Amino acid sequence: MIESGPLFVSSGDLVADRRYKWALDLAMRGDLAGAADVLVQTAALAPSFATAWFALGAIRDRLGDRDGAIAAFEKARAADPEDYHGARLQLARLGCGDPAPPMTKTYVRRLFDQYAAHYDTALTEHLAYRGPALLREAVEATKRTAGEPLHFGSALDLGCGTGLAGAAFRPLVERMVGVDLSPAMIAQAATKHLYHQVFAADLDTFLVEEARKAARYHLVVAADVFVYVNDLRPIAAAVARVLADGGLFAFTVETHADADAVKLLPTLRYAHGEAYLRGALAAAHLTVTVLSKQAVRREKGVPVDSLIVVARASTPGRPPGRA
Image (cartoon, rainbow, N blue to C red; front, side):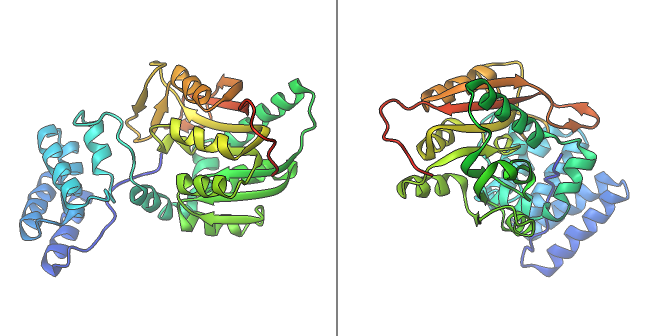
């Protein structure tokens, strides 16, 4: 699990900043009640100190004070419209407001920028992550069933991160492009020399611009990316617009029992139901070729319910695209 606790952002008041750090020290020593008291004083000194409000919400939550946690997280959200710390997600987890709110770009960028340096180690050694390998197997199965050669002229790695999926698919691709919201993750990916081009950009904006340029890809991959996207319908439609005729869209999601719904999990990752996914892909004129339930990672030693999905572009009457 990627931790999403408060990352210190100064209040601009030195006294308030010192009190905040004192509160964290108390919390680390196990004095949660004392830490909460100091954070209340801190917030009184600097009412717009979103970091302090978020920390207060987290500590009240640990103390079992749900109402107090909600009140603090609401203050954090109000003080920070970009939701740098993810207060709206904590509110959803506590059953307050939208049950599956979208994550802000600011929150996701911050989350992965701070995680980039040890991302590969955490996923492969501690979480038993195998998403790219499972995706490659699913893509190989689709190609084999269709009697097609296992080769792609061009591929787009959405949310490429440090390049784990890029490494799995690079031997099959002539030209590979990577895009990720986090500049720190892109910097890590660039060192592996897997991609012909890498871009630090919002996925939606990037796909719109690629479609405007009439770019076409034979393969679009998104490994462990859509657990941070609540509504997959717009991105499925955007991917369809940049796929070459017959191109493949391969991705992973976490899933849950309610087939028609999107759910925010306690880990602050989204889970998508199978029926919801099929509907989103059908609306984008993408035909499912593989949809299998497998665990792509483990959480605290327990396999996480996941779906491996491959879909093929099937837009009727579209002029052939070139990648």
